[in-house]
Amino acid sequence: MEEENVPPNEFAKPDFINGRFSNPKSFSTWKGLPSFYDLIKWKLFERKESLLPSNEEIEKALPLIIPKFDLQSNLSATWLGHATVFVHLEDINIITDPVFAERVSPSKYFGPKRYRNTPCKVEDLPEINIGVISHNHYDHLDSEAVKQISKNNPKMCWFVPLGLKQFMDKISNGTSVNEKTCQRSAFDRNKTLWSGWAILGSNHKFFYPGDTGFCEDEFKKLGEKYGPFQFSALPIGCYHDIPSWVPQSQHINPKEAVKIHKLIKSEYSMGIHWGTYALAPGEFYLEPRDLLIKAAEHLPQNEVFTVKHGETWKYPQKKI
Image (cartoon, rainbow, N blue to C red; front, side, top):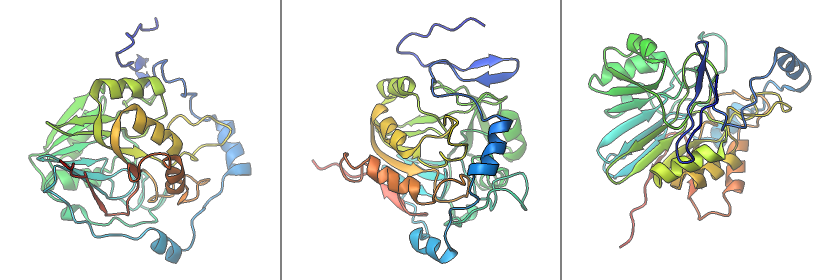
């Protein structure tokens, strides 16, 4: 396959070969998934099954707040755990990768389990107009949650990456499902595309990348073409989910999240994708938050931040 010549100001597109997607050449951090040998070596010599303290300590460190959704401000966001964020953007209510399951796996009986409960139930959510799905991993696509949200919001619209529409049509209770090819790029080599979402209102813009590796060129293009963003929800955890000697190219770390915050010209960015599921055995549960604080210490206070589970952030009113 000939390499595509991409103009400097245009986004690179994923390759599609033999029915599978692969990342464009611009994603130089993508080194492929760990080999079977790497995984065995990791399991035997490096992997730690848990870096979680007692339930009492977790309750103290990560308290749950009953959400008080703000539907009056022009822009607000409530973190519901992991990558699930309820965003009120002008007159539209948005939810990102809604996951309310106890375990993020094909089974209710095994697989990564929650160590922080959801701060609310699906039925407690306000009316939802738009749902965005970044990809089909279980910690980002909870079919039961999609079914419930769709049932409660029959007029809503789901936006999903290329390849997911057929699956979503089966579980979305007849709600509208729009399949899009994300202009930014892809982060997968499988049969369905992975994507991030830029949602542009009349006066406010929101960015959610889903799972992503770091690519300076593509994020810089995003900032130049669609920025500045008033708010972004950026992943900061699960970067220890593969062996340490294998280059991480699926999840960014807190330092990279701060770099992306700058590249896309985000006014405010919330750190998400941490503190909820035990997905990265080599990662202390508070490490992503603590490293984000350190990485952002040179920025104005509260420009890059985290919130408690269920807590609502409001876009600051500009003083005239």
